[in-house]
Image 1 (tube, rainbow, N blue to C red):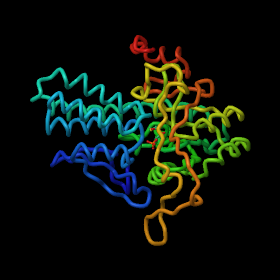
Image 2: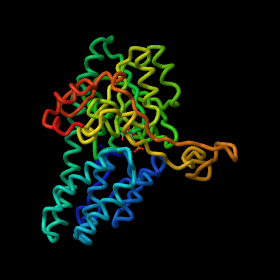
Image 3: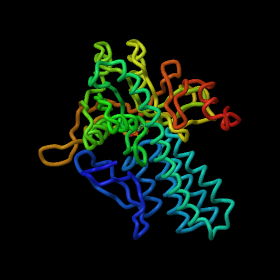
Length: 366
Ligand code: MRU
C-alpha cells in the first residue's frame, strides 16, 4: 500500500544489498522509521518486541530470520537453534510455527551449502503468497460489502467496525480485514470504518493511519464504544483478523475481539473474520481450551505510549502499587462468527465449512 504516494511492503529485501528492511511499527503513527534486520538476535527482538507484528508478518519475518541464520551457518545444529529462538518469541500467532515448519521441510533435506539460497527464496515466496492471499480475501470480502451497499440508499456508506490492526502493516501487503475495505474504496463503494483503539498497544492507531493514508473515511473509537454503536444501528458489518483459528472455526484474535462478537450477536450485526489459510491450526479443535494466550509485559498496561509535548514518550496511568494483567488475545467461539473470509471464498466457521474450503487439509485435523 502507499505512504505519501510511495508503494511499500511491511517487509522487503533491499534491491542492492539484499538486507532485510522493515517498517519499525513501534514508532507509528507518530514517526515513520525503517529498520534493517541483520542478525538472529535482531529478528528475535523485532518479533518479540513488536517492531513487526500481526500474524502473517510475524511468519514472514521468521522466514527471513531463518534465511539470515542459514547464511551465517547452514548446519543442522544452527537450524534447530535458530528455529527454536524464533519460535519462542510469540506463542499465539500460528503463522510463526507455520513458517518455521515450511523452512524445516524445505531446507533440512538439502545439503548445507544449498540451504541459504533456498531459505532466501522461500522467504520471498512466503511474502509473495501472502500478498496474493490477502488480495483474494479482499475480493471475497468486497462481495459482502457490495451486498450490504445494495440494500442501502444510494451513496450511503457501509459502516464497518474492526478491532486491532489486521491491516497491511500486519501482513506483507493489503492486510486481511482491511483488504475488503481497500478494495471497496478502490471500486467506489462508499464505506466508513469504526476503528477500535485496541488497548494496550493501540493497534487501532496503525489501522487509522493506514486508512487515512488511503483516503478512507474512519473514526477512532475507544474499545468500549462498539456495543453502543451497534445498539444504535451504526454498524453494518464487523470484520476482524485472526492470529490462530482452529479446524472447527474458533477464532483467536487480539484481546477484546470476543466482546465485539458478543455485542454483534446481540444486535444482529454480521461478524466476519478474515482468515488466510496459514492462520488455520488444523491440529486444534477447541480454541478456548487449546490455544496458548500470550501474556505480555505489565508496562504495556501501566504506561501509555504516544506523542507528548516533548516528543514521543510514555505516561503512567495506574496508581503506584496496583497489580496489572495483560492477556494479549482472546478466543471467539465459532458460534459467534457469521463467516470466515478465506482466500478461496467465504465459509461457515465450522469444521464442515473449513473442510469444504480446504479438503486437502482434512487429514491433518486433530
Ligand atoms: O499483538 P499483535 O499486534 O501482533 O496482534 C495482531 C492481531 O491480533 C491481528 O488482528 C491478527 O494478527 C491478524 S493480522 C492480519
